[in-house]
Image (cartoon, rainbow, N blue to C red; front, side):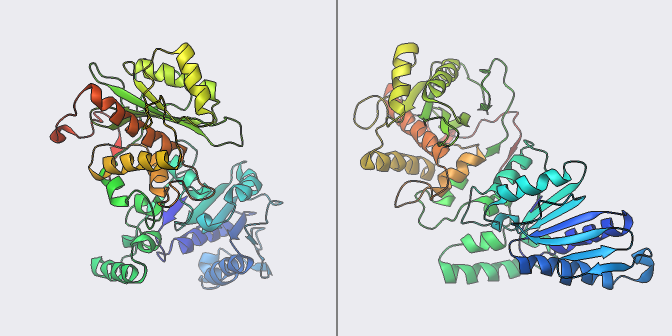
Length: 428
């Protein structure tokens, strides 16, 4: 799959590969998908057919056209290409399927369910797209992020704006000035012409509670590490194990835990540096996330726990009172847990904003980075249809660090740096 800047020719390259398959692999079936029917027809009729018509006779390998219309192109060796909008095409078996502008498809999961089984018997599928910044947690971006981390069977490729040879820094600066003058931010620039995949995947920055520059200065991506004796909890991602003499804080954002509810999320920070050392997220019931918090917190030197004290948070706190020896940290109202009223939510994200602005925390999870960058300034929630559980758990952990600060003073500012010794990292 390919995440790309606009107008660099990658769609042409993918179609060239499809034509090669049709000519040199008899009976190949190629499915071409785009958002609208007219766009799918353009891929087939204007581009793929056009390339074939301009090939010299020797490169056509003796192939003749036996069928040609707006939606189908068939060669004499039995190879065929068909064009569909992204709402159709599930009745065919393909040796190659290409989905153009996949991040702009309204329901990519529906298309994947319909089409991917057709190539599971040995075919191939190509997803390619520029980013749609209005949907920072889209299906395409989720597949890309998982591929980049090696968590699925896809290969991730990013093509920046400079992948086109005739573009230089002067050209880019001209685009940047134009976008900023028109919109007041670089969001559209990073959507159309990103320099890094982090720019492409990040949400829009206007009207967000946490400025992108604050988050980026505190973000060092890490893929996690295998740490000896870590709790055997599915989905737990550990960036660094507990260190002797270090204090840790856990933020817990619980949910109902059924398949249709939000995720429950847990973030562990090293209290003095504010560095993310572990995270967990999933469809976990209150008692389950409480038990996981106890196991993880016990491992991290008896960490303090800051639980959101709303709805299912009461059940988490009750479980911890009855079953755990961890300290339950007090929120802004002096009671254990954080009460997320309108005032509480504002105070929670004020604390998070202060930490990121002053560089007092270090974030390693890209999923959490995306959610934090999505938090709306007006609602202090993710945009409708998006998730904010990881963001809330991180903010709760930062509030927990602040609550625990009374037990011991902060380290000097010059010692605040990410540890990450021996981990695979990539910084942007």
